[in-house]
Length: 607
Image (cartoon, rainbow, N blue to C red; front, side, top):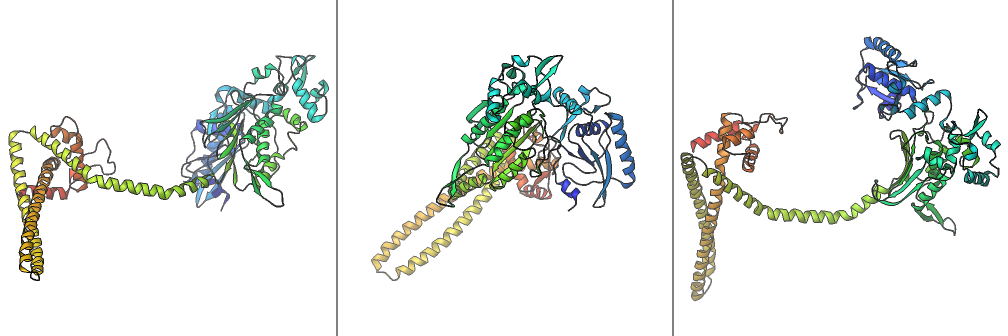
């Protein structure tokens, strides 16, 4: 399989976009600028985004499209962006690839707008107007300086409370945190014979100014009930100095995941946590060390669910790091001052070793899946229990037979109650039709009464004839059987049983007559229902009509349930059909007569 075939399977994202045709000037410029301000990206022209169908471009148009792309980028993007345009041939169809590399002079913006109004960044698969914080970060990237290295002029070093950090530093390194050490670590900087703390030292301090400048430099921890955010079982806000945040957050995770025995290799028991602890600790540490502290209103979040642990850090993954290749020893630093300090404190063991630790630890947990994504301007790592769904399915399998039995019982109950419900519905329908008939002119009522009377009489004669024939056959058969049996009995017993049989036959006859009378009544109700049935089809035979038009012609104030049922019945019997068959619910929908309906009307006229 070709490399391009593999790319077609990928979703649009931070570094990838598909277009069926050459985008508009504005749309193309925004995409190119967003790629250049971030990690670079690839734009494929000639491919549908939703279906990934390769539409292709005309071969004789490739050169002109390439020139248009280069001209649009040159005329609309600032500073200058140089794309790398190439042609691809896939299954006989040509595609244009515009590759944009990470820019060295950000922020890039629309040439006809200012930096504040024309700078775009890539967020997922979309282009977003950059905020002031993002623009400032892009300007720092151009100068190769980091946010944590910038001076803070509100307080001098002497006024800053760093006592607890000094103690922690001495405990971990055995070294006094003197002014010379602070200077060497670039935690303080001098300017015009005054010494000021950097953002890094503010974040490591316990001074009140830390909460004023960085109110969101904290970790929000939560244990939720179930598999989605909702009810809290436990929660904690960790807003201490950032040197000790990761360890406090790690302890919170330990409180809410379980440890169990996994077997005995020797006489000693071996315990194992349900999640890879080394990997989780490394992800938490990376969240603290590599988060973007310049973003306001965003904190680190650790969410523990029944089936997963999620760790979300503000700031996108650095462009030079590919988290999917976790064993390649990659290393890049966002906070250039904090990272060396954390290394001295033992929080970072070795440059480029973090992803390898995560990869090796996750290999020991085949039941755990590791996933990552970038929701907005953030980076999220998720440790999920693969077997969690299987456990739920097992519970379902156990309960399935009982559920099926209950469903079967409900079905039987519905079937038993259905005749009664249908009878009640038919009765209500007939009453509505009769009430409607009372409002008709006298001559129409008389005509329909005579017609219905004839139909009823015919049906009655038919039912009586069938009942008599059936009863006569049953009586003859029973009489023959009884007489044959009587021939073998004494005379007095025969006489007695003959009288008894005669009484039973008379009762049977009475019962059959009662049943015939009931069937006649039901038939009368059914035939009475046909009056609206016939009327509707006759109206539709004249013209194609909508439900509303039928309701008006029938003298109804609004579309009745009886009319809806009659129309449904006519449709089901294929006597009428929709005028707009492909859109049954169209507001312009009407009904027209079918060939079968015409034959039905002819049969009515014959009667």
